Length: 156
Image (tube, rainbow, N blue to C red; front, top):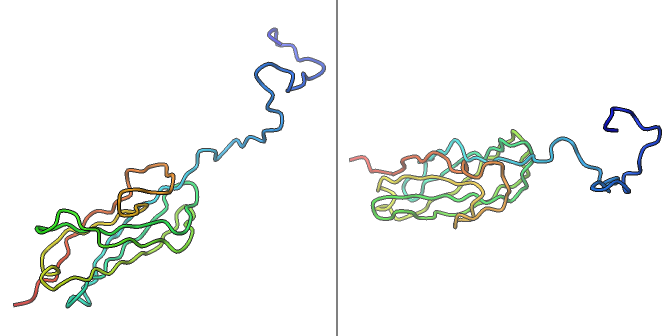
């Protein structure tokens, strides 16, 4: 009571004004946990530079909850001839628990003249290529990897 006295018999929860939450089974921890997906370690493989460049990035879940399989990852490039070209979208193949990573890859195939042009490439996780994501993350603003310069300039 207001005077600090403990009642002998407990008042039924469902009869107390403003309560009626007797069977809610409310969890006390982890209620607001969410995944936090980042694209990191973007790399270009020039092994097949005569017609394509392989772009690889690591998808990292830095959040406090798992992320589902099938999260879209969009690969982009920009250069003198194009401000933003979508190179393609791939999806993760498995669920990522907190702290886990998965490497995703997209091959950029283009005419030799386009590959020779120095471009900036970047990747964005949880993006279907239009900027739309499907995973509710704790931080939606950190999904893009640091852009890297790519190009297959011929040796002359």
